[in-house]
Length: 448
Image 1 (spheres, rainbow, N blue to C red):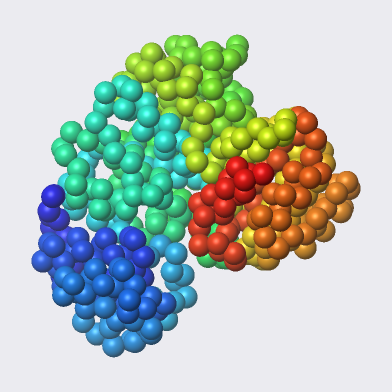
Image 2 (image 1 turned 90 degrees about the vertical axis):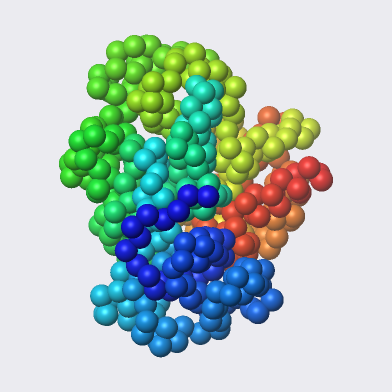
C-alpha cells in the first residue's frame, strides 16, 4: 500500500460515512493521522461504523456536536453533504478547510491521472477510456463516481498504472492541490442547483478540474458547448477540443462520416457499435484522451466496434414480443433524458419521474414527438404529466411502483415500440441509488 506523503493535516474530522467516508477514515488512520468520524443517520450496528470501531477509530453518531471542531485541522466530508450543514458552516467560520476524499490522491504520489467530469456522459466516457487503455496495453484502473473510492484506489496503485476517474461537481468543490494530468470536460447543463444554488457556482465547481493544471497538462473539452468553451478560457493547460459539428484540427472531430484526430482518420462512424448521437461526444472525448496517451487506432477501433454501453446508461435489456426495453436509470436530469429520447425514432413509451429538485420539465417537451405514452412515478409525476399534457402526449399514466410501470408499458405497447426507463430525476425519493432503480426495472422486464 502506498503511503501519504507530506499530508499537511494531523487532526481530521471525517463527516459522513458510507463507502467513501469509511475508506478515508481507514486510510488516514493507517497513515498515523488522528481521525474522528461523524455521521448523523448511521446506527450502531451499521457495517461501516463497526469497521471503524474495530480499528479504534472514534465514531460519533446521531448528531453533529460543535465540540468536534475544537481539535480539528480539516474536515473531509462526504460529497453529498451540503455546505449548509451545521458543522460545515461553523468550520468555514473558523477557517477550517473543507475537502473531499479526492484531495488525498496527490499525497499518494499519483502522477498518471485522467479525470472526467460534465453534466452527462461521464460514466460512458470514463469506461470507454478505461477500455481503450486496456486494449492499448496501458496499465489502468477505474475510480471515482463509477463505483470505486478514488483515494482507496490510489493507495493500491503501482507506479506504472494510470487512474481514470469519474468526478462530480460535489467532489471537485472540495479540492485544494488536486490536479489531473488529463482533464476532460464533457458538457455543462443546469444540474444540481439545489446543492450549488446558482449556475455560476456549478460551473465554477466543474472548472476546478483544471484549476491547478499547468502547461504540461491537458484539457480535453467540448468545443460545441458554449458554456464549456467560456470557462476553459481560464485554463493554463494544453487545450484539446472535440467537436461533432466543426473541423477542429487541433483535436478530434467528425468529417465525411468518420472520426479524425488532428487530421488523421481514426474510425468510420458506421463501424461504431454504441448507439445514440449523444454518445458520439463521449466517443470523441475518449479518442482524444487515448491519442494523447499514444494508443493506436487499431486498439481504439477494437473497442468502438464492440462496446455497446454501460449498465444503466441506455442499456439494452431485452426484446419481448417485439418490444425493445432499454434501461437508462442513470438519466438523473432532463438533459440526459432528452439525449436518450433522441437516440430513437420509433414510437416510444417513456418511464420517468423521481426526486423533486424544484425544477419544471418544459425542456422535455420538444422531445415528445415520438413518445406515444408517459408512465410516471415518484415525486415529480404530476409535474411531468403537466408537461406531457401541454405537448399532447396521447397516453399519460401515473403509477406507484416500478412493477406497475413495466406491466402497464408492456400492455399498451406494440411490436417495434421502445420502452425506455429514462427518469430525468434522481432516484432518492423511492430508491437508495439509480442502480437499484435500474436493476428493479430490468428484473420486472425479465419477469414479463
